[in-house]
Length: 226
Image 1 (cartoon, rainbow, N blue to C red):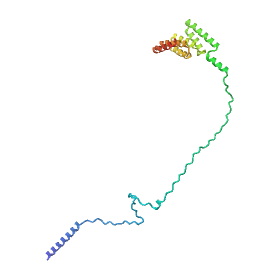
Image 2 (cartoon, one colour; image 1 turned 180 degrees about the horizontal axis):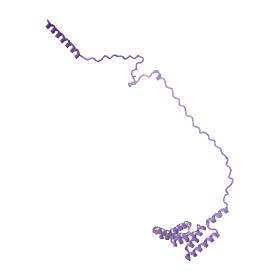
Image 3 (cartoon, one colour; image 1 turned 90 degrees about the vertical axis):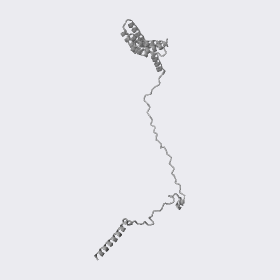
Image 4 (cartoon, rainbow, N blue to C red; image 1 turned 120 degrees about the vertical axis):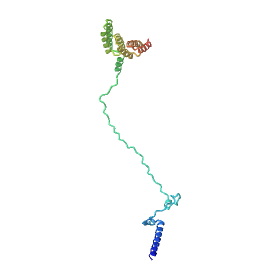
């Protein structure tokens, strides 16, 4: 009797094990998710894409069929230049009126440009004569002083520059002699005799200074005025 109970218990346990294993081998089920979404109303639903989006033309509405009014553009107003006020104030006439030069004034200027007054010219000639006599006596320094006085009285007299340049060259002042001769050239643009003499002095001065190239150029220039 006891053995039959044990055998029945084992049989029932075996059946329960088979049922349990069969349930575990079946398809699995995930967790249950509750749908809490709310359906939108018909008025709140998003309309589907129109045929225009899909590339198809739709029939225009009644409002689109009406012709549009042209936009009126305002014409810009022309720019008007403002009128400037010009005030003219009368100027007082100068108290002193510059008078035009008379014929006498012009004659005086012409005489001054042509040469020295007779009295000054006489003084210059006397100074040149004194310089020649002092040079003959060997008094070179005193002769230079006489010629410098004549230069101050007659700064545009070519004879003064010619004698003073030659005297400075005889004293060994070649650079000074060249400067005086070049200055004398500017005073005699149309006097060939003076131009020849001044170029000869320039050539001799450059020779003393060791400027052989400059000496040759000065000799060429002097030969033009022989």
